[in-house]
Image (tube, rainbow, N blue to C red; front, side, top):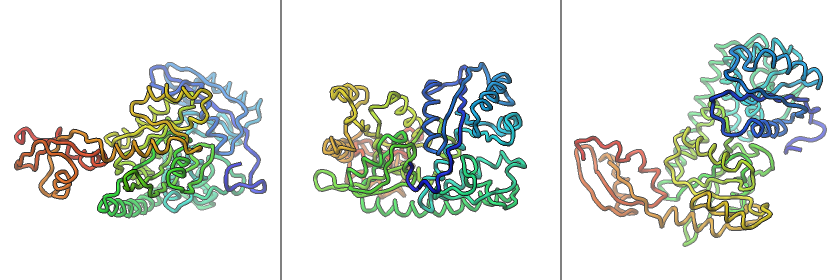
Amino acid sequence: MPKGRTQSNLPELERTLIVGVQIAGQPALLSLDDSLEELSVLARTAGLEVVGGTSQQLASPNPKTLIGKGKVEEVKALADELDVSVILFDDELSPRHQRELEKVFGEKRRVVDRTALILDIFAQHASTHEGALQVELAQYEYRLPRLTRAWTHLARQAGGGGGRSGSGGVGLRGPGETQLEVDRREIGRKITKLKDELGKVSARRGRYRAQRKRARIPIIALVGYTNAGKSTLLNALAGAEVYVADQLFATLDPTTRKVDLPGGREALFTDTVGFIQKLPTTLIEAFKATLEEIQEADLLLHVVDVTHPNVHEQAEAVLTTLEDIDADHIPVLTVLNKIDRLDNPAAAQEALQDFEGAVAVSALRSQGLDELLDAVNRKLYETLTPVEVLLPYQEGALIALFHEQGKVDRIEHTRHGVHIQGRIPGRLLARYSPFAASGIPAEAE
């Protein structure tokens, strides 16, 4: 039973039918079956009971209903047979898809897509004010283009906390739930207000990060597919007490802890929200304040569940998301977690061959942590990476830092700034990446 629920406040699980679609020519990270299996796990995390599923392969999506007309009738018949109250789609539905499908399936059944499902899970797990703001913003932005008469009364205000009231259920938590009359203009005002509040959160985080950088303590962000074991690893490294559960998106709010490195050095390790394939763009934008912790890190620990059958696909999804949030320039150290679950210990060594420079650990059993911290220390301090940058003269602190911490091979003062070729420790790469040599004007060469 998920944390925070008791038998008295847990409603009867809603019977759910899942529907998957594969469009010819559209790239897919996971197979259709594997994606539906992941959707089932998401549904269980949200408190739904999956009682059946179906899928369809299409040459192109139906503009009205996504799936074909015949498939719509098949889904309706199957929903009647299985007596389901929720029909859950594995892809984000357009507003038109949602409206047309709701007409066919009737008012007694809710049509929910993957995005709404993930938003619902986030609403359950947001335990801080910032997390609640981010969830609320994402919910309003998701629902704004989907406003119909069914959404003009809200049963309860948005926000994290995870409790359920009334009939509860996916798709009805947050905006759309109090008896307050809402129109597009009012929702627009709410979105503006939430963005303003989150802007203040981002500014505060920026000030904290600036303080940490002035203290010259490197920042290490733990990233990975949801349920890869990031929170367990942070607990093992820092003796933290981050909530851990064997479920997707158990941790939503970032947690930062100080960790001792070899040689008497220190670093700040930050646990972040897990990634997942088909991560909605609305979530990426809404969680910008949190994702900035990743963007501003000196090193990323990419935590990978080495036991998962789709381990390579999950790793690819994480790397793709890092590109989407402009964090792919930051040095990455891959951590293969959960080696204690491998039947054959040699399998861990085989997995290491697939991930260059990776370290194998068991966060749960605290195995391999010394080797991991040694690798982190080398990445941050001992490995010097070649760079070529053009630093504006007003970036005097970065120019001085290069001389102090790096090795200058060639330096030239131009009218555009200081052109430096040399090598710097890995922990400093993110600071210099905005000034990479690719942006040097021709006359400065």
